[in-house]
Amino acid sequence: MAIRALIVEDESLIRWSLRQKFEERGFRVTEAEDGAAAREAIDTANYDLIMLDYKLPDMTGLDVLRHLREIDTDAVVIMMTAYSTIESAVEAIKLGAYDYLSKPFEMDELMFTVDKALETTRLRREVRELRRELKTEYGTDRMIGRDPCMLELFETLDRIAATGASTVLLRGETGTGKDLAAKIIHQKSDRADRPFINVTCTAISETLLESELFGHERGAFTDAKSQKKGLFELADGGTAFLDEIGDMPPSLQAKLLRFLEERRFRRVGGTKEISVDVRVIAATNRDIEAAIEENKFRRDLFYRLNVVTIFLPALRARGDDIRVLTQHFVERFSKEFKRPVTEISDRVYEKLMGYGWPGNVRELRNVIERAVLLSKGPRLEPEDIVLGPAEQHPLVWDLDRIALPPDGFDLD
Image 1 (cartoon, rainbow, N blue to C red):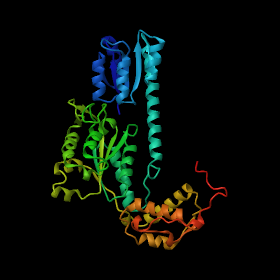
Image 2 (image 1 turned 90 degrees about the horizontal axis):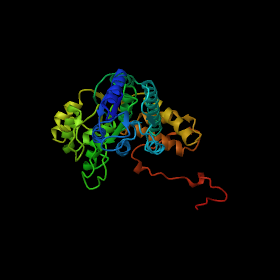
Image 3 (image 1 turned 45 degrees about the vertical axis):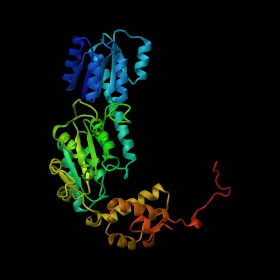
Image 4 (image 1 turned 90 degrees about the vertical axis):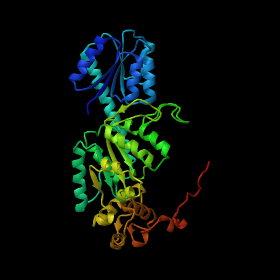
């Protein structure tokens, strides 16, 4: 993805020189000649790099920097000034500026600083993404499976990731790994070094969901005490993942449709049109066609989402993958919980293969996690495997198997 640069400078010759140099490098460049124009540019788009003059006609560069930090922490800011003081430099660095250059400067020196700054930001994003991966359900960017239907799915995900498809719809039952599939598409695409941001359409109220997707302006509603960027703005250049799209409130479906068609939107309470470049991946376990007939889902939105559709197979249709996944989860949870489970009875596999798995891989994971925790020895037996809703099988600990320290615990 092209680097997006904003040049905030009141001297037209310096703006022109910087623009020429940046465009030679393939940057997408926006210019602002004063603080007001800079703030407007920052409010309506995301930037990777901001060249910010300290002395502007209507305010200082520090004022612009403070405004930027209220809404964006990722942009690299390099301050420029002919009026350098130690105090202003220290303040700029405290506010998050990467460097503070004194005019006049050599263009080669500037580009060296720019390259270092952009590389630092790229590494920070990679670290953030790695930390996010460590917190995911599987702790890996790969799906596990050997069944032909899964091998075909892997090939499809690779093909879609390599294309410029701006909208993808993932369909499948609960627990089939739609969220993981979305992350794989993102990580294998040319957007991988840009944000991957997700929202679950049923997790929050309708009013808050609109704000989560599109952002809001200060004062847009009672608790809107400051401006906030939404999912699509934060994911600019990357991927926005809309989980459980089939349950999106009808009032928001029209606004989402407009965004998908135009890639432009307004924040809640705002009047400015904001354009973004984002791949939208939506997922659902619902029968959307039935929802359309019941007037619960817009037909035109479905057509817009349905350009590229990927179906994720249910676990019961994946043959021997149940055995493969069971072995994987036993290894994982044995290490995680320091439990000495090293074998799995053949009768365990028979029991697992005979079950319908309405919760799919997620349910299998939970069943094996519980079995490893409560196993009485190094070998998993059928009695360790509890199938069906958890509320029918409350977790009861055998107190004879819990060892307490001789002196007890210090609860203080």
